[in-house]
Structures are given as structure tokens and as C-alpha cells.
Length: 141
Image (cartoon, rainbow, N blue to C red; front, top):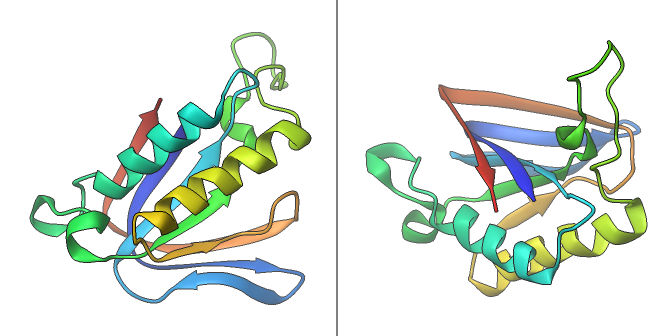
């Protein structure tokens, strides 16, 4: 499982002209990709990492500040571009495997007390964000 995590001052996800998830204060935008070998254990570990990731101001985390997270599923993180000009998606989990694991990350974050907004799985989404810094990291478990 991997995530591109950006520190943001605000972020939102729109589907068919409707805002389906948004954070209007400093927090994290999480683009989350699921590998075909990922398990529930990976989801728990990813949630723990995201919640405790100390990239907010003064090396704080969502756990220590209560800052929100906007989690957006992004299978394209597992696009392999090493050969040719067209990405291969063989490492990305199939939707029926990925969706429950994305949901597990969100559920685990919420159980930890995190405020979490989400995109909509398999939807054509417009993601908007105001990066803070910019400060963006790749998190893999």
C-alpha cells in the first residue's frame, strides 16, 4: 500500500458537480493506492502511519493536533512506467480487492479518533487542494 500525502490548508473532492468530501482547515490530503498483495494488516499499518505522520506545523501530526484528513483512492499510484510510454496497471489491486482495504484505512483512522473525509471509490473525481509548503511525502507499508 502506498500513499502520496500532502500537507494542505484546504482540499476537496468533487463528483459530478457535487462536493463529496472536503477539509476547510490545515490537514492532510492522502492519495491512497492499493497493491494486489495488500491485506488488512497493511491497511491497519497505513492508518497508523497516516495518523501519526509528523509533517504538520512544528512537526505535529493529525493524532496530536486533531487535524483532518481527506483520503482519496488512487489506483494509478501503482502504474508502472519503466517500459514504453503507456503505464502498466498489473501491480494495482482489482477494485473488488482495493475498495474494502481503502475503507479499512478510513475506518481505522476514524477508530483512532481522526476526522476523515473521503472521495468516492471508482468515481471520476476532481481533486482540489491548496498545498502548504508545499510539503508532500510518499508513504509505503
